[in-house]
Image 1 (cartoon, rainbow, N blue to C red):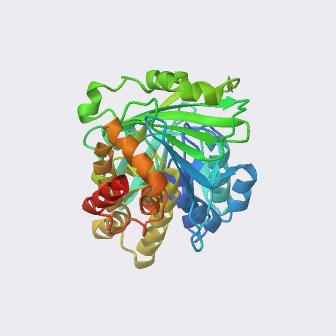
Image 2 (image 1 turned 45 degrees about the horizontal axis):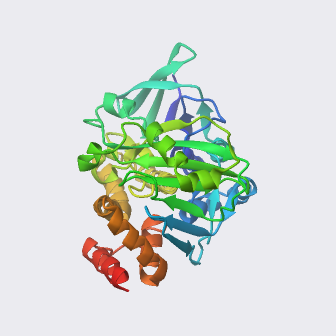
Amino acid sequence: MSEIYDAVIVGAGPSGSSTAYYLAKEGFNVLLLDKFSFPRDKTCGDGLTPRALQILDDMGILEAVKQVGHRLDKLELISPKGYRAIAPLPKKEKMCDYVLIVPRVILDNIILERALASGANFKSPVRVTSIEQENNTVLVKGEQQAKAITFRARMVIYATGANTKLLLNTGLLKKMPQMVLAARAYYDGITSTVDAVQCRLDSVPLPGYGWVFPVSDTSVNVGIGLFRAGLASWWMPKTAHSAFDTFIQSPPLQKLLGGARQASPIKGFPIRVDFARSPTFSERTMIVGEAAGLVNPITGEGIDYGLESGKMAAEHLSHMFAIGDFSLKQLTAFDKLLRQRYQRLFVLCDRLRLLYLNPLFVNQVVRAVARSEELMNLFIKIAIENQNAYQGLAPSTIAKVILKGIRL
């Protein structure tokens, strides 16, 4: 344990690997740890928004990801009654006007390999069990192949996704946060044409959502997310698996999946969406991506937030090294950067989620989205746009736009 790393990053998913890349390319001595060896599967919807693609382009791996991804340029929103609103992705300067669907077993390995090529170190499988402060450094303790190991670093970065065990054990989280419960499976042999990213509110218990994301012309990633909180817990299924079964047995999904075969097990997974109330730092500690609750509360999309927050953490930590200041004041400044960029959106999405408890109202909204360009633009901004697009979107403004669209 004689070596002292500049940063140890726990978790080698998109947020951890992007943090490692941006630090290593600046010459910092970085160690990535993960409890799994790569490549490994990660249960997810597999969608990459234009914001995610922008970071991958900046990392120099967009072309590699495009080679293995399925490209789509439309979003489709389907109401409980089957009304459809189709939105082409807008053309923005320096932004892609399409999304890519890339299975995480492929994507995460590409990002990790880029971090390693930039100079980061990687050890796996390592199960981190504790993180302790000692003499202006951090001790990261864990196990690898049944042997105790310890690493010392000047800073530690949590990129542990939805797994809260380490955050709870170290006291960074005081209690288990409410999570979205999700499940997904892959299907091959699709004969129906699916040429858009489908966000489905039909045959799902509101305020939940379903998705159908084409992985190729003949295969799809199908999933569902449940918000079992507040009043919704009274009527929500107890497990995502049971809701998933109901979803795929519904007539619309049976028609879409007719003749297809299930190509993977149904896998359940939790999703952290609590950024608005989640900690992002502690003494010599930063938290990025889903470990900080950075997943969109309405759409469940989190890869873009993970990549962006990883880059932000690396840039801020580089500044801290440059001035030799690792104080809580500097870490509070990192939290402020994240809050300025994302807090308003997450508070807004938490409130908007309450609006679609009523299926009759949701049906009206989706019909309005289909015929109102203003409402369509609002939908795009909330779902996938960059951080500047939703600045100034107050709940009262959104309510006026929705009501105006319904009256058209």
